[in-house]
Image 1 (tube, rainbow, N blue to C red):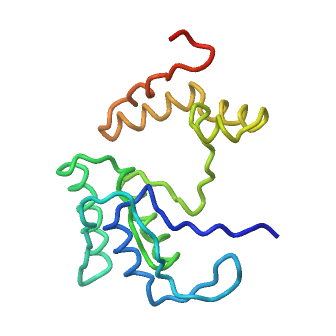
Image 2 (cartoon, rainbow, N blue to C red; image 1 turned 45 degrees about the vertical axis):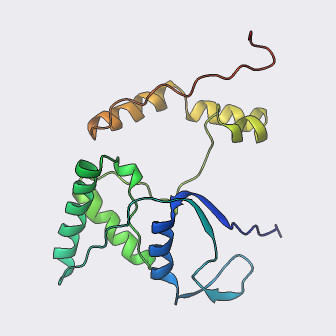
Length: 177
C-alpha cells in the first residue's frame, strides 16, 4: 500500500475559497485514504487571497439554477475572469452532477475535476523533473499542435482569446548566454 501525503499549503485556491469550502464540509464525516473517519474541515494554509466567493441562494431549485448561471456569467463579464477561473462548490457528489447538467444545458464550459487525469505539460517543471521517456512522450502527444488548436478554439469561443505565448525560455547549460 502506498504512503499518504498530507498537504498543508494550498497554492492554487485562495484563502476565501478555502474558508467557504471548509464551511460546506466542516461537519461532514468521511473516510480518507487511510480509512479513518474524520470531519471534513482541514487545517491548511493558502498562499493567495482574492475576491470572496459568490453564494447563490434561491427559493426553488429551478430559480437557483438560473441564478447560478447568471452569477457565473456576471463574474466572467464584471470581474474579467475566464470560466476556468471559477469554481462551483457543493457538499455532495449528486449535487455536482446536477450542476454539471445545468452548466451543460446553458453551454457553460466546465471541467469535472473529480474525473480529470492530470498530465503535466512537457515544458513544465514537473515534467522536466519527474517524467522519463515514455511519460514525456505521452505528454508531448497530449499537448501537441492539435491540443493547442483545440484550446485556442475554446478560448476564442468563450471570449478569452488565444493562449498567450508560453513563458520566455530561461538560459540553460546548452543555450548561449
